[in-house]
Length: 410
Image 1 (cartoon, rainbow, N blue to C red):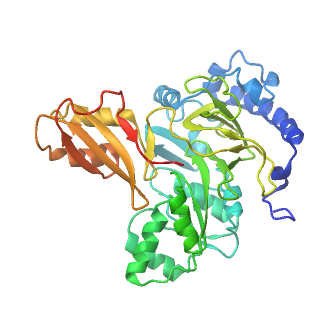
Image 2 (image 1 turned 45 degrees about the vertical axis):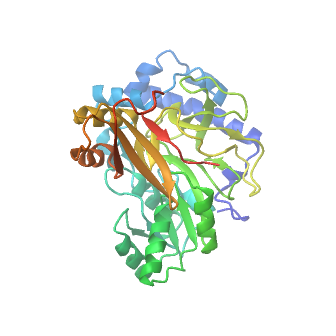
Image 3 (image 1 turned 120 degrees about the vertical axis):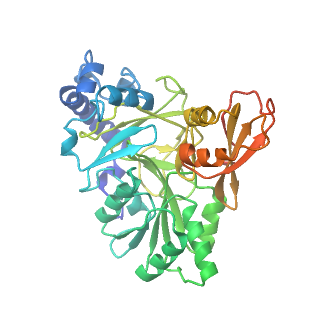
């Protein structure tokens, strides 16, 4: 930590210093990937690493999409030849929706969450209730490793079991929450019903879903400072808040581009496009990874003194995939839902907000007035619970949408 309270001196670099450091880091990253990762050896066969020295130079390289990773992993399990060391040399193996296999390292701050937690004021003396999942996907360990790196104690709570979460928070004396934006409200509301005092919680670090203004205000009214990060299972921390509503500062160990969706071409400054990220992780060097998320660069720098570029925040998906209650729902899952239920002709997932929480409704066209087995299919295939409504055949809009996100992000 620096004398003025920042995480490290990297956050205070001038634009020239940061460009100089990137010019040194990128050729080394590309060379390592090309020499030690079989998948990149094939993809970058004609690339001279010494010529890739900036975000502009990266545009000469192909964009890597989740579908590419899935294809590579099917052909070359488990990691598609994108890691620089054998699978047995990693501490963890994760399986995220897709399915996509992801490696992980338990020691240190491998996913770089500590920088964000430090910006939230979390550190030694804090007891962090980590409500991200520890099951199959890496989110729980991403934030546990970050919390341990800043000296905090971790209560590895995971999601669900609200009443038990309330009791655990009280007994442990929890001072900080880590998890999806909505779940803390569920815990606090249940604590109110039970008459349990959780006023020690004064900090919240959230991710894996949109932080709506009304939700942030709810926490503020309860004396809780809530900040959000933009992170993915593949990349770790990409960008993070330090001051509410001032955009998300890009992490110091990634290079970020904003491109026209479906291409690798940059959009005009300030225009919304797809976020493409290169992570300077020599174990798992994802190069020009297309996140599928929409955002834009925000001009200027943060009032907190950190000098890196900022993103305006999440502006939706480049495709129709969307996060609901912290979990991605993808068009191919909706197609699987229809294929699994012969009495369903078409289906459409509608996402709204109710009582400051995500709500999912599945609209299904069928000649039948009721399809009782559909409720079970929704839980099994979409991995979420939601309302199901049967509609007459031909009643759903013919606009190509299978996922309709009606949440207001303004």
